[in-house]
Each structure stands twice: as C-alpha cells, then as structure tokens.
Length: 102
Image 1: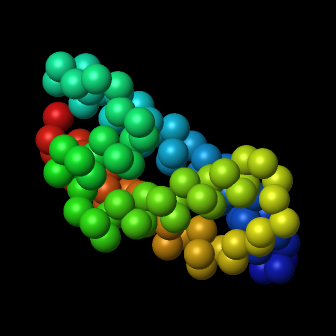
Image 2: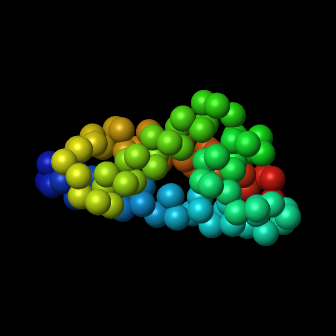
C-alpha cells in the first residue's frame, strides 16, 4: 500500500507545481494592479527589479518555472518527490512574503 501512495503522490505534486506558478502569476498581477508599472518582461524579472525578491529567491523561482515548463510540456526530465516538495516549499515561502506586501 505504501508503494502505491508514492506513485499517486508524484503526479499530484507535479500538478501542484503548475498551480503554484499560476498562483505566483496571479499575485504579481495583483501587485502590478497596485502600481503604475508597465507590464514586466517576466514575472521573475518584475519581482527582482522591484526588490520584492532577492537574488536567491529569483534563482528559486527560475528553477520552479523550469520545473513547471518541463512538467507542462511533458519533457523527459523526471523530478523526485523530494525535489518537487522542496520547490513547492520555496515557492510557498516566496508567496507568503508577497502576501505580506499586499
């Protein structure tokens, strides 16, 4: 039974990665709505250039986006459950930080 949970958890985590990116996009759109700023080239660029995130968080989001794109576009890249969970944790920390701004 334990083994079947492992198999079931990974697709759920992959789905969460895709949803987490959507949540970040929504949060950035909320922030942009509060500022008169031209639409950014990229979400990560906007957050970084406007000092909402630091360089390390920028790298974490770039990795999240890479994962999201690989998952969404069915690439051959396989992520472990641990990697997926770590990326989600990092994204949640950044989202918490952004939520405090609003």
